[in-house]
Image (cartoon, rainbow, N blue to C red):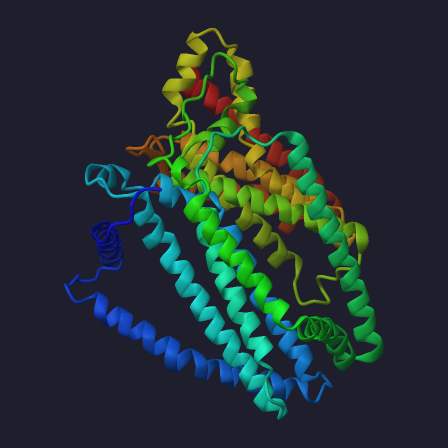
Length: 505
């Protein structure tokens, strides 16, 4: 592992502080670190314990009339602390956290001054992880003390020791996973993706069954019975922790120590100062089919918009699989009208999701920014009509998670119209992005080859979306499905024709 020098730590810390001041329009001073440390210390020593005690008293006051004991509440707090430690480890293993260490944005500056990778890891990952662990441990411990005082029973030291051990383990795992040396890996195969979707669907099915059971219990016995049933899980955790005693404290500590030793001794010598970026060029005339153009560009690009598009697509895909699983478990059990959510509001949320994904994809692969490469592809011998059709249909693929979410909602509500509306949203969103980009003066290219909408392009996109959604809001049910589907397909076809005439002609 590269040596950890104090000068390197100061350099990275000052660089990040200056960047923070620049982003927030603050005037940097030499003594900025002192007030920051003072405010953090006051918060951890004064504010967090007081807030935790008040929260513990509140939980005790709410639990007493419902017959929920101190052990149940304390066990629930411990479950939250364990989930927080696990979430920290997962976050440290994310691509973004590891990129901050091995391929930071200021890699050229760090390399010029020979700043060690260990210093970057310590300042940008380890310090926030330790601060978060301390904050979580103080808050959770204060809540447990408040719960004990609220119930009039002393808090067992095992609880506090277990919370501290979980905080140590979470911080150590976060740093160790973020410091794992990068290796060249192939994209996960389809079998892995299908397995992930099946797991998400199974979890959604469990949530659906739990929702049915909770709704039936709530209707039969009321809210106190439902809360008592949920609190039983906390009671089971409490019994397990108290029975384990020192083992409940020793196991998280052992995990944290093991992660730290692995970081210091195992594999640290294989660190590389930077992670070689993936190639961003797409072979449009050879191995890449026209229909795969957009997806390959989104997957390979290292631009911030591509990263956001990938994350949003995965998030909505997993959420859609979970909704499908919940819909299989509880078909037709979600009453949107009874829950206070009408169709207009629900459709607006789906439309917003589609527009966010569509905007990110368009900024990366809009036809205005890709015009030169598309023309070069035609000159290389690729069939022009196949390229137009493939590029147009390929622009739908990043938006398919919206349709998956709509499929799950259609199962939950028992209304297939939701699925039709989702398909319409996908078509209209893709068409609005293409037409807005192809409109005269509708986009401008950035220095990184991305495209941005101008006022004219944004106006065209809004008009296209409004026109495509209008039949669903104006016409009655059977006619809205037919008219909305036909109009959405026509808008996408118009985008394909304009692409052919304006870019490739």
